Image (cartoon, rainbow, N blue to C red; front, side):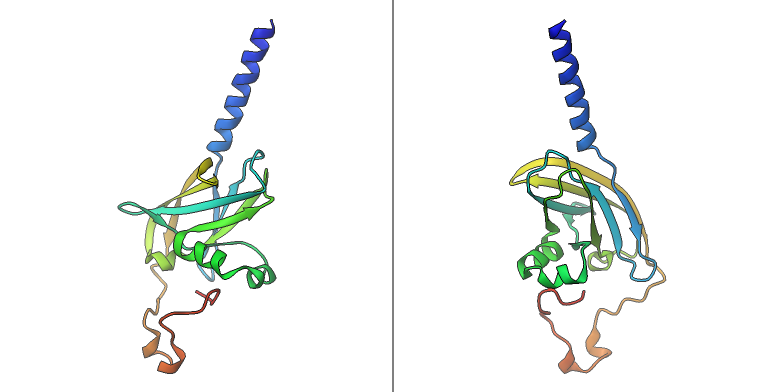
Length: 170
């Protein structure tokens, strides 16, 4: 009897772990900015600090340009390395988020995506150890948007920086 109970507990734990590893990702595209707000579940067993690695699939997986969905005050207080880690490497840090749905913001324009169904993968890491992997296919249609890549032809040359400061609007 006790052996069956242990087996049932193990099976339940395994099922709950699998559910956390395959938790659904939800997303919403802002109609004005066209940024994509992506929500994901941080496992209840996650430590106090979790690295979130966000990638999009092209011919190969590459970092997505993301930042955490937090207040303007929190963005101002964010360290430059944290901001640049999200924009350049697709890595943000979640603190004290165990068991919570969290949201990041993805800018598809920085990947040069105009119209496509983009597969996004979010990996939650405790150091190098994966805690959960979640993915979604996100339809992106920015075919009606004009993107100005060369601002030197739009504004005065002295106002354009080839190397913008950390946390500058993107």
